[in-house]
Length: 116
Image 1 (cartoon, rainbow, N blue to C red):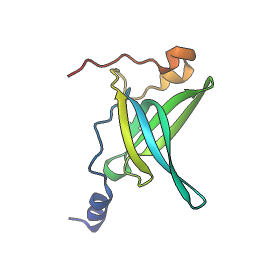
Image 2: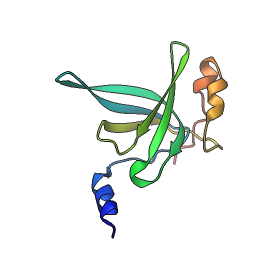
Image 3: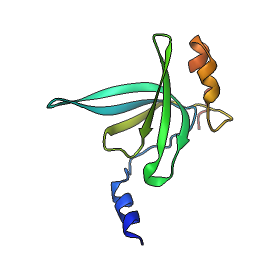
């Protein structure tokens, strides 16, 4: 096994849940301000996934005061304390770029997946 692969395997988080495009999530992000550390929550819809293994990332979109806000989070980053799935979505696309042109409640509405 390659040395680089061993380092990647050690740094990967083992407690990551199954994340899919269309899911509504809460990303708990650690923020360091001065000497203090706090958790900031960013709640929105996953509109895209990218990368492989260690470099895997998700793009999360939410509406804030009528303005769309998107953030890209590396899943295995030490600054991410946890990613909590609040609602499973059922979509037929790999990237939900069409949500960018929607306004109001339509911009955050995705069909809910059936329960298993």
